[in-house]
Length: 280
Image (cartoon, rainbow, N blue to C red):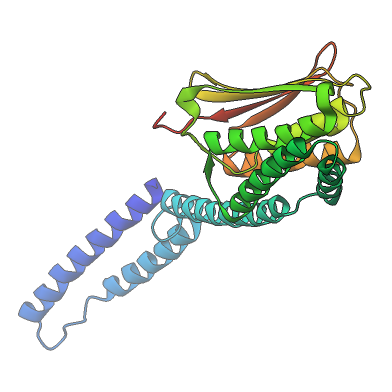
């Protein structure tokens, strides 16, 4: 920047002196207005000075250029993140809309098997199944839901599983009332609960207990999905589900949400920390 300032001062002096000399020659020697030969050499020198200065620091200065480059790169990064977020959300909506065939077939088969021996139970199972399907369909079409809607979806899902597993499954879904209206991406927790049932409790002969708890921890919400089942054993399905969850959280919360898995004795706990909106 010092070199650039020096060049601008040089140019201003040249212009001032040039104007004075031209004025002097126009008044004193009107027939030879351009007789100031030294000015030509000075002008050439100034031009060379300018080329050397601009080639080194740029027309408006290196800091200005670096600032413009940084702004451009920031804009490109925001544009890229926005595109990635749209792609991830589109993929997640597609996944939300897909109910696993084995879950659908097992549920309908259980309903059929209960119609004659326990019609009331079959009716209850159908009611929960319809509620679950309705909530899943609404979630697949939405980009934003609430904690209360997610909790209702989980209760309908677990009520279905409870009818199927009977006394082998005990569960609770506890939500801090202050968090019920908090915005939450649809079906964010449901895959984690499904993994806990499928990989933790169903393979266990005596079944077990599943606890879902959503509570406030300062400026963050902590969602805990805990079971006393078989423990965490990485498998293809569970690994993909957790990978999708981490990717979705990273895009939704710009890397400010975290997932961790803790081994319990017995069982597993998945803890998800999500930043609260400013309104909360």
